[in-house]
Length: 154
Image (cartoon, rainbow, N blue to C red; front, side, top):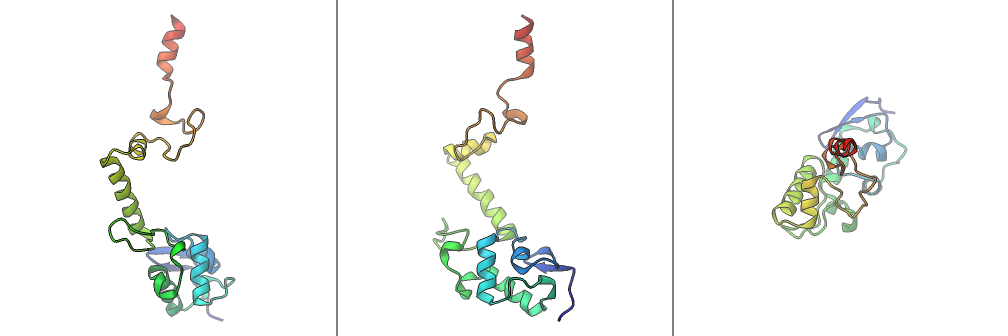
């Protein structure tokens, strides 16, 4: 059995080498449970294996499958960027690419002045949640304390 490495570098992310493969892959931004399960299944690794015991070649193969899911036979419906606006392709973005793409999407919504874009600008919930008792922090609180105290003094 190979020696356990404490920290593994996978897709520009430091990962705890004592974690199971599926759990460790989920530490990469943009990889969730279903995608991690599909990656491990496509490579036919034992899910109970600790990621720190894998060789460098096996870790590179995991990284290659995460970055190029179409070559490993991972279905399109499991990817996080289906029918991309610019290309129309099904992609799976991870790490800084995912962060940058999300930021550009939000910026586009703000520029075309959509309802969702305005909610993002105001820092309010975007997906229809109620706000009477939730999301009440910072500048978003509806009643200002000074105004209430002035009215009470009168």
